[in-house]
Length: 137
Length: 185
Image 1 (cartoon, helix red, strand yellow):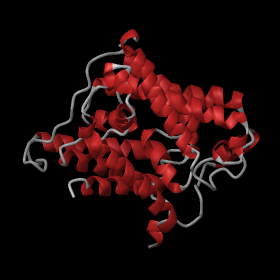
Image 2 (tube, chains in turn green, red):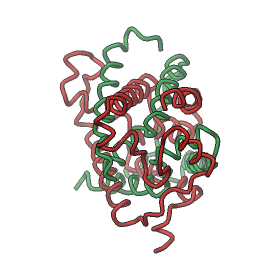
Image 3 (spheres, rainbow over the protein chains, first blue to last red):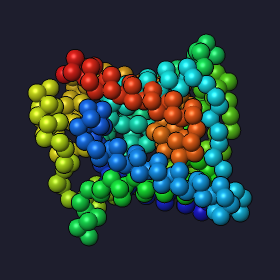
Image 4 (spheres, each protein chain N blue to C red):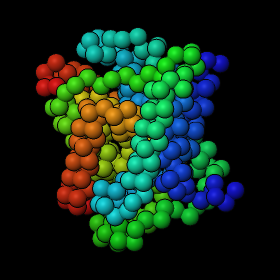
């Protein structure tokens, strides 16, 4: 039962990303070619409403399920890992048109070849784990 | 019902994606889909090869449950909540893709030329899927997050590292879509 709420959040997430067309390979291509506002609108309104929510919650009006303050973990400072890692991620994102959420969602829509992408992504993460200490961060 | 079956507009979709983040924060967790790739490495025994994968993966089972839900959500959305009108792309995009050899742009969620079982019989599509997956999996962990962790959660909480990462996402995406894809297709 503890996990039911997470399953429901996941289902909602999957539905929203399909209905918003954010899982569409074509929408991602269109975004990176600056030929449509659609994806910028989605990301922009998502961030704007996220900022609004977190600013209100910071004032202490909104608590989490355990009555504690809403907590967002801080990313550690750095430059190289974010810019280089970000570029590598972006290259893959525009090639397959899917980031780590949509990969699974697209599998659910019947794009079975996504299994290959997911397995390759797991392998990519494994390679990072092996090389981590040798990479500049 | 019609408004549910049609594609949802950006100003409805964006805040609904944030609602996913809000719900997970409310449950005392965070919105980050790429962490699951690391969890799956750990479950598969990657801890034997690198300390990076030695952690209590059972604490991450909630996130794998979100993944399971996302797969089900994708199924529900396409089977029960969609008409087959396709994606309303910019006509210029459609022409451009046609010239690159992509037929029927926007009629499906992903191009058959890369993702169909037919296409997989050619080494090209298979290699592209593998390279794409490797880049995403490696890049997201190097950058410490993906679209959900950096672009949505990180930028919503006004974190500089996430801004740098998202700039990186866009540099990479722009290079791929504008310079590399035209070379491949």
